[in-house]
Length: 186
Image (cartoon, rainbow, N blue to C red):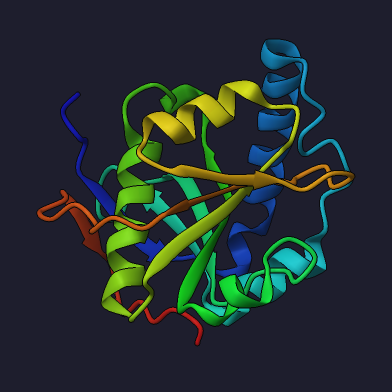
């Protein structure tokens, strides 16, 4: 699949309602398509706003000044209930809250954005990009494996307890362009 060019910018507080709408849309689609209750818990605007203000949340567009079509969040720390002390000692980025609008799904936007996240994290010194997935979302697990991630383990009793990571070198020459200065939180 040819990767679409993407333009990535930091999210701003005005994106909060868009992110809320996308999450609701994704939750409905996941329930209908996969029978998953992922993202069915109430949206947490204060947490989302804090991540935006930290510079951890990104928005992706198909044109430099276009409407956003996807998002993800990259944070520098994992949760100690999920990751071991040894794992947490390795320089890493933790990818969270990745969503592509349903209208733009299936065109490689999510994969391109996540490859950019790996490259960006590596440029900032991360040796690995880790993420969690909803335990009952087998379709998402298959997608992550297909994208070259390794399943680390599934933590019992945690809804988002399926742990994945990338350790290989990020893809070079991605058609992704940063709009404005993007500095990930340390």
